[in-house]
Image 1 (cartoon, rainbow, N blue to C red):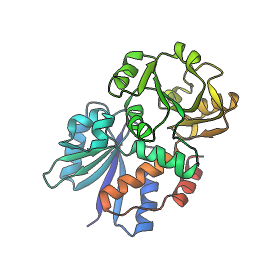
Image 2: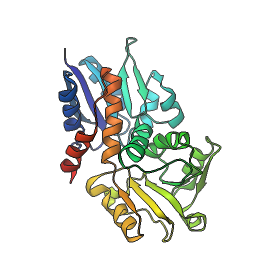
Image 3: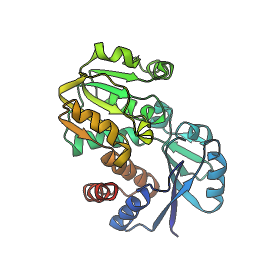
Length: 272
């Protein structure tokens, strides 16, 4: 029987994830289908209930539902608990959903394994304090960064993250200028949807700095354009993270871990 999986979020119609998982399934010989299910905020529980009755086995959760997913899962992995956000669900024998979070692992694998960027002992700035940011903070801390700052327009949300981790500091955009420069700046906001970059000050990118947007394609371009103007040595979008976190989700659903380099190349062409 085919393993039925899906992506839940809003909007999701143009996501490259179905093609990515088709390539994973082809590579590993798995009989797996993957679709998109547009789900507005507040409707995730009912969408997953319907999916389960129709032989749904696993799913990915994307914006803006990663925090909502916490409340609909009967069980959570340690990664999901630490992140306080869910991006992967798996139907269990108890007929409930187990929530996990593969975002942080995907980011670190892309930075260190694909881009060959050192994360250990680096000063890191995470821009944004929503579900995407929550998903990556624990993984960055596990790499023993020398400093991790979360900046957000509503500083209270950044303080919520900082309050859970002793090594994280929260800041407003006004305070970031005096705290820089940073070796790695990660945009975890959705401001690209409005064709805007976060209001970051000039001069905060380190001499060999890396600027990384968790989004990809046109959504990442406003922030990456700012990064190029700032002279960042490494300017990266989130295609590699998309594939790496997807490969981890695929492994959770099937027990088979696909190779990622060729799939990353295919996805880069897909979103270009």
